[in-house]
Length: 213
Image 1 (cartoon, helix red, strand yellow):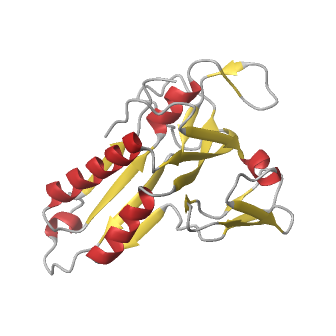
Image 2 (cartoon, rainbow, N blue to C red; image 1 turned 90 degrees about the vertical axis):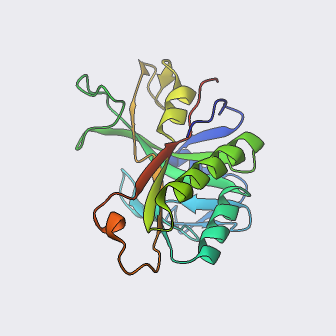
């Protein structure tokens, strides 16, 4: 799934330390940057607990984590409504580029340069339409089986950053490799013999992309 116009107006990318110092509307930070509260009515947060580079664990209250499990149609419907009625937040990493990486994905164990909180507005008509289309295509292709679907912001981040991206505190322009750009929905059906899921055939992936800044 691709969105053709995730611009700087519809995507925000905030360095994590700056996010904690000056949280955006809907967030408050307590206990010396260690505990982050969010407004669950307006924010859909998919951020696991993490460690700051200078030390210390950060916990986001009301975060669903990067892997969300639903077990019935009601849970799925509520999750889908949250995605398309709130701002979506995830934590990503900008990593040093590796010449051997030809597919734009980050190899394992590469150096993390900086972490960022990324948000997109699921209420934006274009983004909402693309999310709904990606989820609809997933459901129609698995025919009632259990499945997992990755919702990926990697292409959107590459389009947002372009070729003249400067890391905070660094005047040198870089083209980073973006890591941890997905959050995952896992749906478990009640089917007794769900062989495609057991064999790993019910995995789906769609991307939110940026072809214009």
